[in-house]
Length: 124
Image (cartoon, rainbow, N blue to C red):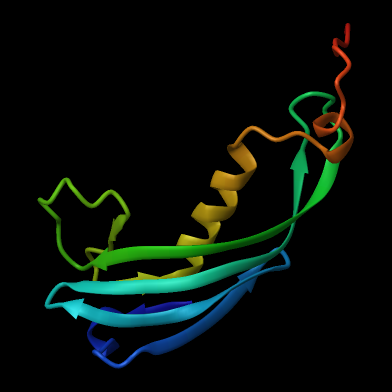
């Protein structure tokens, strides 16, 4: 889902999209001449791999996401939650894919390993 940066105004513009069974919905609103504020929620089931036993498992994902979006290069290094869309088009699907990949590359334990106190080692 792509939205032209110039189509966003001070009044919140709702959006909703999804991929791989994960929904992303929220609002976009202009917060400055070259800034748009994204306030959304990502929810759905994601398949993760346990970093302890290697088994795949479903994880219920529900998280809030607040970002600043810009249509120009930002020189302000204080705001690390900013994404630059230099072509003037906000790509909501790109943001969702990035958040899904960030979840998948984080360190995870399946419910069985998370509740286990036993030392664990597998020989291959």
